[in-house]
Image 1 (cartoon, rainbow, N blue to C red):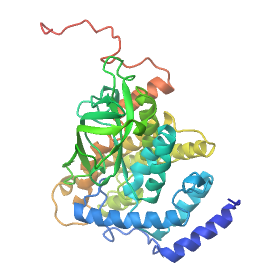
Image 2: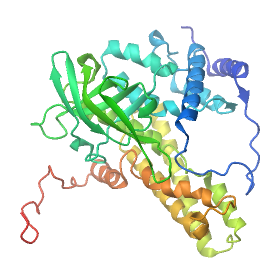
Image 3: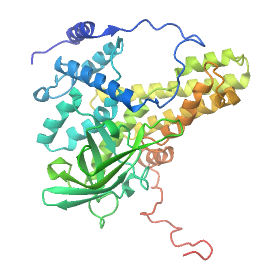
Image 4: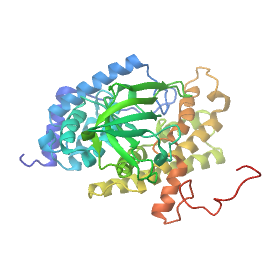
Length: 417
């Protein structure tokens, strides 16, 4: 493939977008009481509408892949362009100026699962699966959490038993985003009960439409059902679809988790941004309240720290470095500021947050406040992320757990044994 400059690439991408999409209208200045009134963290969409949006998203993904913009950094032998990340960023910046179908359906698959497949899957399987994922022909999901193993992922119990050239998966996963519309999933299972919990795990690519896979929606307190329980009833997976070596699944999981935290931590303070908060305060004539102003500046400053931290991470990625423990810090910064925003909104709105009077910019914030606890769990709970930062960045001793030695191990409470 002949070399192309960034300027030539931008021109080519602009031509493609002009021919296939419509420029967004210029964003007008935010005005309280006008425009969309939905700062919720998790969108509530009925399943039929969701299927229509997914179909539109896949059509757009296929169109841009076929035009050479679907996998800009990918191997040319697999349908990619083989270009540097700078070209991908340039295209994304351009596409953001146009009205295109919702691409969030591919966030987990391309942001977390595909990089793991590229690093750990059998080359022939990767060559088959990755082009289909980047073209949008198949959608991927991540199956890690279990009822008894959420933040402590290594405690998972979904079992994989070898049967010749296949593995039989039995057990349950939970909180799986997008499982109901996904075609494949990355799953971590326990393959050796006799090894320490981190060392008896193995990763697999599983067909989400395979016999024995049962997907049940989970209703959230927001009213939506963005997540699912997934049951594996003796689901058969070919050994060729294994990720990495047998019992080396923890390394596979870390690859995915670092990309997950990079994706979540790279987000912004949802809910319409700081401008929406500022205009809300002005609307309720609280902008001269010194305590309100102090709380707002606390949120603003922390948001700026998060933004600069993400810029530093992006600079590291440009140098070819992989996401590390700092991504845990980025995700923690994000959820801490969301928590502050949630508390701030609750104190400003009071009863207006829980009683829907139809007043613009009031009850709609309930979706944000109710969704915030989920964000503090997704991608690793705040407590686990603090442990990661303490142990891997600050070098502090490992947190005592059920599989570690503790000075209190032999103590009992009362007469219980």
